[in-house]
Length: 233
Length: 259
Image 1 (spheres, chains in turn purple, yellow):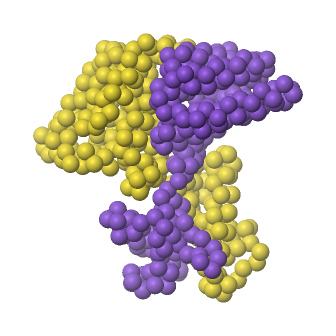
Image 2 (cartoon, chains in turn green, orange):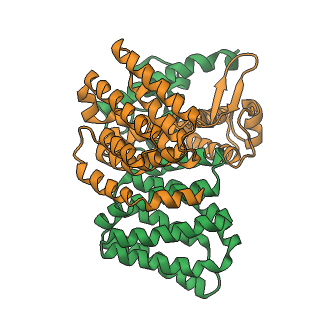
Image 3 (cartoon, chains in turn purple, cyan):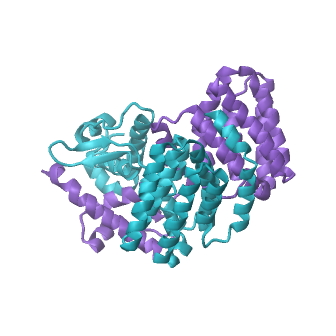
């Protein structure tokens, strides 16, 4: 009867363990880098079954609060959830919700235009160099007749990083997948447009370097607006 | 790699964790690419263990992880099993909130990101909210006012307003991004200190946003939203530049074109 009765109670117990560990983190009794006691010790301390402890550790691992390391110095370590975990979660939601390319493009018009003032204010030399480098690779591929819209998606995602705001950057990461699919559709509608887009990317980097949000916005509005038209028609 | 239960007892925490991650990844990929649909029931643990060539314990670990990600729901009983669910956003919202707890995200990061997303949301909602959307928002505001008097108003109710507003934007991607903010505002230290007084302010601010929506007044809606999100923070300057930004309204016009 093991499979029949255990899931309910262990589920509740493991959630309880997760809550206890989270509380310890919140109260500063556990900090990132700290190693949790071995499963066996936790089992004894908490007075629960080993299965419940395992379940709790899997939940903590899946939600990014614990990292399990292998090897001689292995074990379960407290860690801060990585932004990409949230990005993946939202991206899964968008995929499952069948978000359309025009919805994605509209979201970009809202989101990417609004983040430009932050990007213009906070972009540093490393950000600008990274954007330039993406432009270089894209242009080289374009000249060789092997341009891939994935480079464009990469550019837009990196732009989000220029805000130095983790939440904004992770949203830009979320949009990368849907953005890529919308760009592929736009490319089918007008295969020749890639060259113009690359020039606009270059001009955007210049505007950000000049810390000129108005100019950046005008370029971006034109740039994303063109994708919108190609998708709509 | 064959693995016996004895081995897993010896090496348990590490190797089993990795194998279960690989299994969880495979199942997750099947779900997000639509090969497994919402409501579909996964094969029983025993069969999955055979398919993947691992122990049942490992399969169980993978299912636990998928459950924590909100991708499956494990039901018990005669008609029980692991069923594919549509992630509601509460899991990512919880992770965002955990990130604030661990100081990966600052409260200012969240407010800034919300300003960027939600000023866009109200702008879109102003252009497209249906009569039904507005009625739902109005009913929620009335319920909120009543609960305020009865002292039963909660943060969850406050969140519902933002959730309905995102739905009124009629854009799935905007809605998805908004969902991730569900838990994080309550983590804001300013909000935590405000206590019950915050609810009074919140209900009034929601009402003003709704009034502007009803008049299809984008500028007023954005101002009311900015004021709401900024209460108690030191980001006024950021909001002013964003509001100026929106006033030019290039985005709103382009957005309508994109539809």
